[in-house]
Image 1 (tube, rainbow, N blue to C red):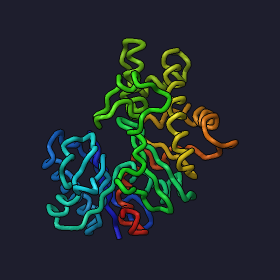
Image 2: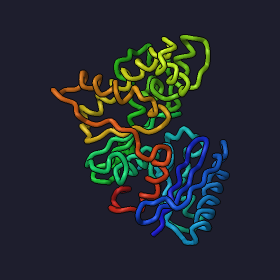
Image 3: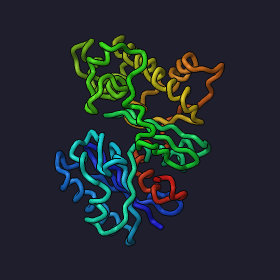
Length: 306
């Protein structure tokens, strides 16, 4: 069986086909139509047809998307790609393409991919985090996504940032309607804005991280130290609550090397334990992990998406 995965992002839609052995057969990506639900569905359909044409077979289709589906209404909610909200995304795609399609939150897809054959392949409980333009999380137990009663399992990025007071949180409104979410402190745009507030100069996060690593910019160095402190605050809550076997990081912020050397020591100081030996690992498949996880929605066990 050949499985197609679709990763629906705010700026791009990626598609790949996986063989039974997990080898990627083909990959394509297109820009996400901005603000148009109908054009977004059409772009996904076109990608599926293109991939099937390349592999010469009809395939299963799984899609990873931002946000989640409300158990109460069956409609999409909480997506930062706001044109999706209020629609039955998977249902509409199924009707449009006349086939069964499976869907899950994009961070859940990252977690599923890494639990199958990625950085968490040897672990029962995998907590995976996307820290990029936004911030989200997913939990996989025995290669099954933990969706949760309210379908928000792992939505760590929209918890209040630990260690902040009310004034700090009120100063950082989130698109979700809350204030002071972890996303508003750890995501790439938030870090770039923090640097700008200190230096009145805009640098991309990758450049800020490079300047910190080269030790040529004290403000950049201070920002990366602050990132590690805040990430430790946020992950310590996960460790105390879930105590996962591994924490896997994806997204652009995960490419900052200091996270892996500094953050574990800081978490150890914050948790209710005399030890912390949980590995914090970069996603094995990097930016490809989400799309691979979407394809894996058709893997075993079936109940991984229930």
